[in-house]
Length: 340
Image (spheres, rainbow, N blue to C red):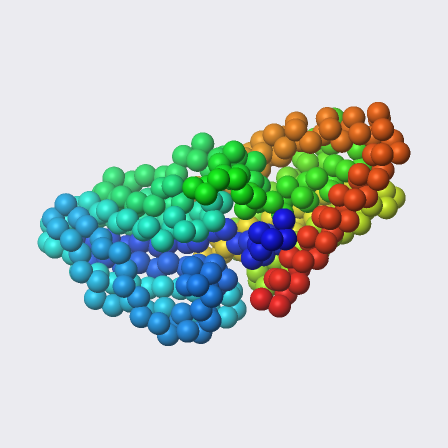
């Protein structure tokens, strides 16, 4: 697990692309967490990335190709975000746009790029991802479907099957941190209904802070939230090892859910969700998280319950070994994120 060398305890797996397209001009702004941009560039320093020149993939329209005129990059220290801005001129009479972005295929499988576009008089909200890297826009307004948002929530926590395989074969899911956090919550055992209650408590806390942060009511920088998320994994593992607060695990899950919600929502701060269907966005994502957790619980909970009931002594040993392993992983992620 440590050999997989994850970049963060709960990586910011969301980028934001804003597009303004008219019949003769296209302007784009692409915001990406600085750590992700650094990995894409092979470890280059963020300051170097901010001063580098960029050649963007070609945009085509029904009237012919567009020509990039300027591209600039900036590092926003306050939000630890790389922002790439580009301007292109397009042939007169353009009314459709197609932009292939192969770089997105190099991002982790859980990574989503939220796109908000105003193109040829139409408003669009959509998503790009590792298996959908082409942006196509027309003058007809469109919005991301509820089903796609639910799938995003399931994938976010590593519960979708494709999270465990890539072109090279089996791999750790990019949401392995969430899986380990959930496993630590379940290690104390209990009834199946009680374990689902613990997961639901987490989703409740996650939903509240996701909504608060997405609406801009509460804002906490990623540099603070990401190490805190790693510490929640450590703290949950310690609780699983000691087994002293079993009756309060749903409260612990809810409290830590507040922190995990900020980890996702910190990447949404510049997206004007109030005008792009925030209710559907939050509902779809959180339904996906809950479904993903239910899938994981359906697999893990019977094993843990059987371990506690059938082999109590062996069960305690297994629980403590797993708790120590999860705690070490969480501390490792905490150090990685703290020192950059």
